[in-house]
Structure formats: C-alpha cells, structure tokens
Image (cartoon, rainbow, N blue to C red):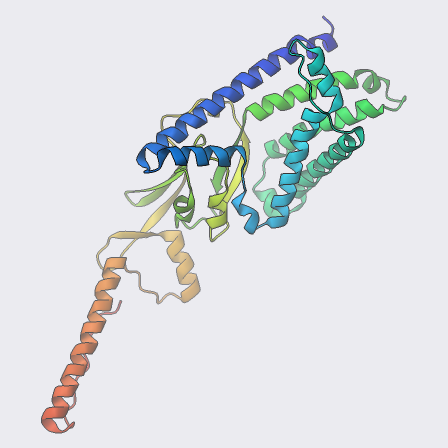
Length: 351
C-alpha cells in the first residue's frame, strides 16, 4: 500500500475515531469529577453548571496580571480552531464523506491571514521560550516540540495550497501527505494534552492562597506532620487560572503537559508541592510555612516574633491587662499621696 493512501485513508479514519472517543471519555471523566466534588456544596447543580460553562468557555483570571500576553493567547486559540474547522478544502472533504456535512467556509483571504497569524504566534511563543531567561528556565524540550507540532499543519497546509518551488520536487509531490500526517499527529497530541497547575519551588511560600481561590477544589493543602502538602486533580481543573491570579509571589502557573498516563483518572490526587512548617517559639505548635515566615522576616526584620496566632493573642492580652493595671495603680497613687508615689511599670512578656 502506498504511503499517501495509508495516511489519507485508513490512518486518517483511525485517528479521527480515536480522537473523538478519547475526547468523549475525557469529558465524561471531567464531568464525573465535578459532580463528585459538588456533593459537599449547598448549590450542587448550580456549581456543576457554572463549572461546565467556565470549562467550555474559559476566562483566564491571569488576564489582570499579564493582559497583553493573555489576549494574544486568546487570539492564537481562535486561529487554532477557526482555520481547520472553516477552511474551504476541509469542508469539501466532509461534504464528500459518508456524513455529507457542510457549513459556510471562511473566505480564502481570511483563511490565509489567520494561517499566517497562527504561524507568527507559534514562532513568537517558541522564541519566547528560547530567548527570555525566566521562561527558558521553566521550559523543557517537550514544550518547544509541542509548539513545532502545532505549527506544522498550518505551515504544510499553506505551502501545499500556494505551491512549492520547482527546485524541491520531493516536497512539491508529497506536501499534501505531509499536511495530513502532521494534522493526525496534532490531533493525537491534543488528545493527550493536559493543562495543569504548577507551583514554582523557588517562589512558592506555601501560603495556600491558590487553594483558597480555587473554585472547584482542584488544589488542596493538608498539614501532615511537619509539612504542608499540596495536591492536585487534573480532571477537576477548569483552567480558570484563579490560582495564578491570586498567588502573591507569582509562583503558580498553568502548564501544558502531554501525557498518556493522565487519560485515566487516579484514585488519589497528585502531590505537587511540599513545604516545611515552622513551630511557635512559645507553645511549639506548627503554624506557618517556613518559606512564608522567611519572606516576612526579609520584609520586617529578624525581630519579628515567631508566635502562633493563639500565643500572639495571649501576648496582646497581657499587654492590654498590664497597661490597665499600670494606669489603675497610677490613679490610686495620685489619689492617696498627691501624685508623689512612683508606680512601677508592669512587666509584660515579649510577643
């Protein structure tokens, strides 16, 4: 069997079948996780519907922190979906298939513009990961490969529709096959693509602001022994980036990850971060993550009292009581000796 017949025939049908079944399976797992998490909420049905709506039509909460970058990502994703779905050549294939589906296509000029715009975005995102030091440190080789995989259907499709130079006969002859093959690879990659929360160890102080802001309970923080452990469930995540918007240290981020193992949901949430808890100087109770306390000491100085909230209340209460007693003794001395009696100031333990 010729390669072009295999790629454009049996392999294409197999990829489409796996893709649609996989998407339906992932959606079922997501809906099951959301319904399960709604059992402990008063407005269970409303919570499920709102979570479903935010998942299908996401609004990235990180827009407030990086508005320009967030808007560019939205435009890129519009190109990513609009071109393959509304391209005239793709619609013709659906009309000629057994389904005989058809819809209004994009004008050719707009299709070309959106294709070139998608390629520009891919190049920009790739250069950003290579050039910017902070982004490069948090990127991996797979991140760059993923951008290249996404760009290939647009590049090969544009070259195929506009013709290849005669000096490249192999590409001129096989560009259509390469276009279909790159599209199949992109579909399978998209099926295995997950967007998950990542807490950067160098920045995260363990304050759990991300946990408090998470609308679906995807993120959880549990104090176990001397550590605070953060857990994450990818099928509960609606990619709203509330964790990114609420993190005071810019430690939370949403990262794409291609993984076959994540297709099936796990019975327990994944541990993504662990921080050591600091003990109170007075009662030895664990009360604050060590990185968070270190950040506070950096801001206010080393003289900051390392006391838990309960001991801090007791210390403050002692100060108020001591001041009241001092004033009472001063008033008694003034009434009894005409103000000549010296009153010793109360001794109050340092907070």
